[in-house]
Length: 389
Ligand SMILES: Cc1ncc(COP(=O)(O)O)c(C=O)c1O
Image (cartoon, rainbow, N blue to C red):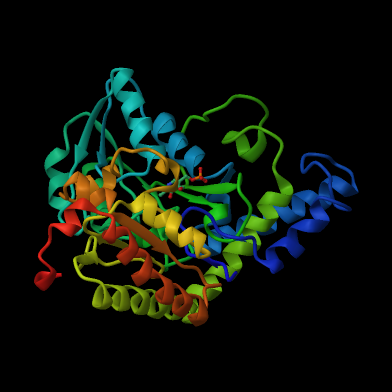
């Protein structure tokens, strides 16, 4: 059976070039980057080259890059590391659980948290962020691009107003890096988190941009690795892989590869919406990353549709990967103002630079039938007069 992977916002396969780059650091050049001997020097050199590659993707200086275990750590690092008791934090209603649950924990610990809403497109209004500012506001943590809808947030405007108010700005760029051009100077953020496994590096490695001079307490205590910003022996193979993946991601953003991905996404989306009744785009009209589409199908649940498509070899997601299996509708889709039924009847399709036109054509050949079969057994669909179906 043909298999088509359209769940790249959950995770991506490691590219062959990335695997080739990291392999020596598991086998022959396996040294500890802190060791003085030849093995250590090989590892240290590789870590520093990777730092340059990550910095180049983000428009940062190499010294401003701190390697982490991924997006969750980067988000926690910013929120726990920048805030002190008595501080107020502003975040949004569409954050990934890595930010949402961290802010909830801060609230339990006595911090003040304001959650700003989004419009129907799933986009934060910078005016609302400005209104939420208080004298004790320390941090604004608002994501760059949403993992479920792909909506790009007005991070430059938010960065500007944070600077004006002398407040830290952290942005979770896990779903933006490698898909669109990201430049920390243009965004004006103090911290920005990325994750390796969303851009064709392995799971368990990531990086955080930490603006020069920004005082951020480490999450963990131990050695003086990463200039005291993140203790623990460096994950050298993972870091090398992240560096290579960032180099390739920059190329794909610059050379039009991601525009090709956007064209495939648009073909998928427009054909499905044109062919199937009572189906549409969640967050329509928002500026979006090129690889993501989120569609609702009335009268059916997303979960059985996901299973039906999986049986045909097509892998998609309902809501965020981390909440798959949960019966609760996605909080992100609910934040867009849609009812729980529509939210539960939604499917996320996320492509990558490895997605082919054949993948999309195959997907288009199986979706209408899968939807029709589920609607046949849907009591609410049966009540819809045939003439209006
Ligand atoms: C927007 C966003 N932030 C953070 C994360 C967490 O990243 P990681 O899996 O590297 O911890 C994810 C992963 O789904 C994400 O999509």
